[in-house]
Amino acid sequence: MKTHFCKSLTIITMILLFVTPLFADITYKVEKGDTLYSISRKYQITVAELRTANNLSENDVIKAGQKLIIPDADIGTAAALSSTKTATSTAPAGKTVEYVVAKGDTLYGIARKNGMSVADLMAINNLDSSAVIKVGQKLKVNANSTETKTTTTKPVEPAKTGETVIKVNDKAPDTRTYGTTVSADANTKWPVSSPKITQVKGKISGVQLSAKTNEAVLCIHEGTVMYVGVYRGFGQVVFVQSKTGLIYAYTGLGSVKVRKGEYVVSGAELGTAGLDSLSQKYQITFMVFQNGQPIDPAKAPRN
Image (tube, rainbow, N blue to C red; front, side):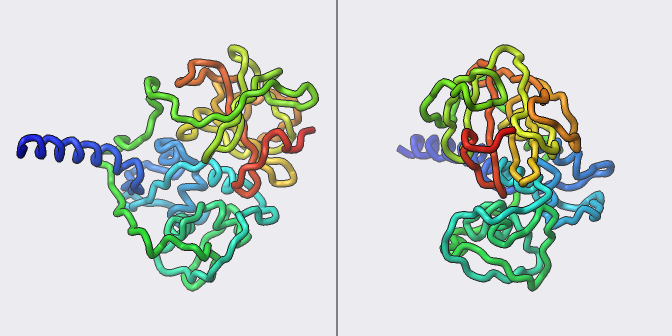
């Protein structure tokens, strides 16, 4: 009986050791030669997310020995922070209360304490992507705060540089949640030609588009390329922002042919469709965001 209990306790402990880091914030100790860009690439998030999580302005310089919070990857937040403008709030309607910024607070930390996403917090406070909060500043937060119901997880510092970089396990089961699959409407323009369209449910809230081998992925609405890079869980990603502030996210690309800051017209080739590591099929995931909130890609403006 005692032996069985000890074995069970050992198994539970091992599970917790593997699972806890996935849900805990990570702290990273800056090393000589590090930049925000190099750190963001290591953890496959955007520089803007890294700045926001640590309340850094674009002019702040990091130093060796400084500790930075590495936020969870959230493509909606990444889209909101990649935008150069904030449109009308699209945060879910509901009651709000006042929150006074305290020393050490960040938008990321405040959002976590109040059961919100950073994108929601930015939207209801009309904050733009360069916002840096100050002690004493008053913000609106959700009235149904989870702050008093949860405890903050102590940041976990990786034992060795690079150990906590999250990589896709090619042999992992496909845990994405799918809706119905339909054929493309001939009157609706998509990034690839005549795709099978599958709704992707949950946090992603977009569509998965089937593609031919190495098929060209085309821009469906002109705009400025705001982000190009590998984003955790989505492979190679391109964000294009329209003049109205919408972010069109093309993810899972096999190759990329545009650069950040480039203005692309409708029909321009952004890259090629990639081979999905889980389904082993050529496809992309396509999403459209307004202030970090997903909108129906089928109804998003084209030109």
